[in-house]
Image (cartoon, rainbow, N blue to C red; front, side):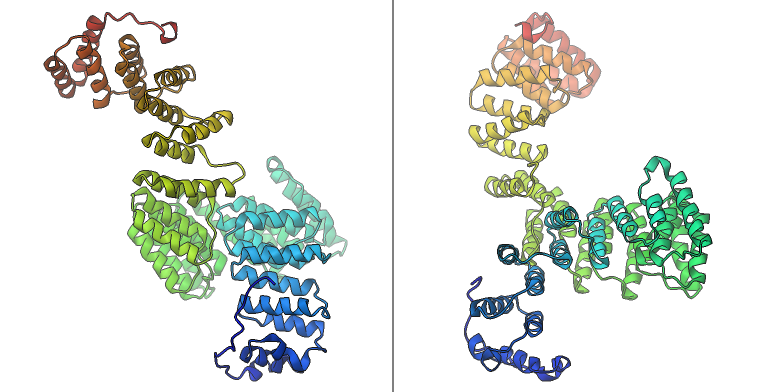
Length: 604
């Protein structure tokens, strides 16, 4: 069995279950009522044990509201051995476990289905894509979509909508449009239109649409009436290419034939008007006027119209205006998920209004809209950026409490946050999780954060492992090398430190102030005065402005050559009072004291 469920009698009172389930007729209402009252399944099923049909077993599973109970009943059916469990029963269990975010149990059921030779059907893959997508595990949803495509199975309208929504939630609008277009084309009865619309390339859009339109008219002339999907496909093609006149002509024709424009095509039409008329010219007031005028003419904006406007305003850094239309959308009962809120929350965060973003998040939750990993990621990252560990972790824990899986973006944010406050163990946990989640491995920023933490603690081996992997992959950057240089200098491994400094110079990785200071400080501390001054001169020639740390290292050079501390202090004061003349004084002093002859460090 998959789970150890309690065998105590269920004490929760039932209210009119017979009435609730009366629509099923037969013995179903009595069975379901018995299952609510009695926890022991042998006892609950006893009167009907030998005569349960496939359909009755399907209804029984589908009506379970608690995943543990559903799994217990499912296992009971298997244990009895006299009941056939088909693909529909497995599909129901996959949906129940997926909605409960019980991924391990779900995979166990799916693997068992495979082992028992029960072949997955179109709806099985659709269910897997649905639950993983809504559960925030986008990678798994995409995996099952890929499997579905490889097995040449066509997603139905519901699955298509889920995939499009998943792409949009991730901000991948082009992929959403591409997927919708491809699906619509495959479903299109008018095959010639399909070929013309779906096989074109971005560089031949005008010719493509012209050809498609020509095929379309030929079909009409031949009395082969295109269906609704054919119209939508061509209208979609016109909309995304901003062919306003052609799109309007086709809409009029659809109106005459009483053909409905679906929400995805409507969305592309609205975006066409917003982008062509207002978006390109940044006339956002006019864009708002477009929606307002719909009310004035007794036409209420639909979900797609609101979505397009809110996304446009949020992307234009106008979160206050976007909020106004978001609330209008909410009042109209058109907000069914967190996507619109996420866009506006992100816009507030981007404009530095984190408190307002948090208030909007709380408002969203107050409307019983489930946050997803995207909106949690925005808030976690925003609090991490200002070093607010407590609030960032609050949202991490809240996200986990909702059964949402961590993704790579949030792991990277947590590594950054824990590095800021010096929490090595928590950073390591996030880093290892990131390695498991992402096949390409952690990015260079997260890896550098870990090297930084290990450097602070003089933990050479783990730092070297990460650094070597970055180098092998060609991802090591200036910061990676600089941190390793600091590590070796800190533990007194000057030979390794000098080798890193040499590599940085050869690879052209000495570009910013921090790296120059690290290398200069290394040479100064080991008494390599000529090399230190060479680095300083190169730094000035590159236009990198020195700071206190630079002159502190150069002061060490001078004092080791016998220059009094008071003289060094005077040079520091001169530099602060007048940058140009102070810098010149430093260069002259260094040259005269050190007896500088500029040459390549590699020749020393």
